[in-house]
Amino acid sequence: MFPRQTHYQIILSRSETRPQAKLYGFTIGERIPSFPLPLQSEDTEPILDLQSLLHGIYNRARYYLAIDYHKEPVPPLKLEDAVWSDTLLREQRLRT
Image (spheres, rainbow, N blue to C red):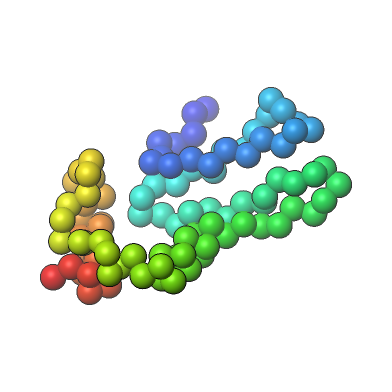
């Protein structure tokens, strides 16, 4: 069975189990899944919360001051994703 259709994917391939890999898929409206960060085979793999990391970078860099959220993204989003995005931006008071 094929995995569901997603906008983004993270693929993890540990050297000791290649060519097998783990696929983490997510769409624009979903939280980025946390995943174990592959290290050396004898090391404990930390869980990487990429969503929190990106939120922290966004906030510290103050990107919300540099991005014009009144403009539509390029390339444009599909209708259902554009509605989701617009609602989110309005809730965050980044768009009127």
